Length: 325
Image (cartoon, rainbow, N blue to C red; front, side, top):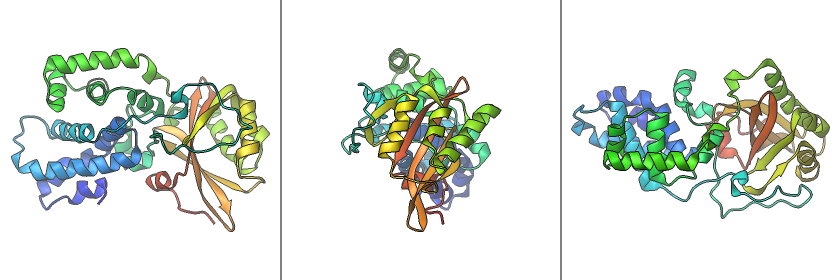
């Protein structure tokens, strides 16, 4: 049963469903901020609703239902906490050589994007999207789980110190200490996200469109022209990352399996509130999911692309077709 199903049919108590179902989108976003994984977040939301349903008869209203649900979700996430998820640029090191063969790493837990479609209708998504930019979530993953929770509850969700302490089952002093350590560790690392898809200028929307069109034409020179000169490109689960429009062009020419116009088809979408593109690769008479590109626009320029390979699960969360014909 998915988190959405749990929200709507965890039990037969209509009071529970009425009180908690509208919170699903923001709880999914919360679990995603905590875990860095769209697929794990779905499972964590399911567990949250199951625990809440079992305990709903004991809910006495001493806090709001929303605060109570966030407390349960936070503890579910803390219990399930694993090693932090990263993006290739977060591994450090020098940019990779685009002429060298690429190989995925299965030993690293990779950060995933969160398709906006997974958050439900546009109104729910608008509420839940706060604080889920890709760079923001990557920065959060650097923190220990309790510090991460304290920062999210206080700075993203605007919980009070007392509510945060209750959610973390600790004292106010301890919760405040975790918050201060988190703020000191993260610094301005949470402020590097690009412009949201809903805020793009007309020029940026043209670049987004041309990004898709150039790949469909197999026009690598066209891709290079629309990238910022010092743009960066990463492709989890490939651990290397690349810097410079010309280097990215060379990577596409030498490493991408697409060879001619029509090998790729692109569908614009939105992930983490950011402009994105679903890339499909020709396989005989059909086109199958190949990668999900999340785009960062800064000062009107396309400055970074996170291209997530093996994206079938992410395509499903985004409501995208399993194949194109």
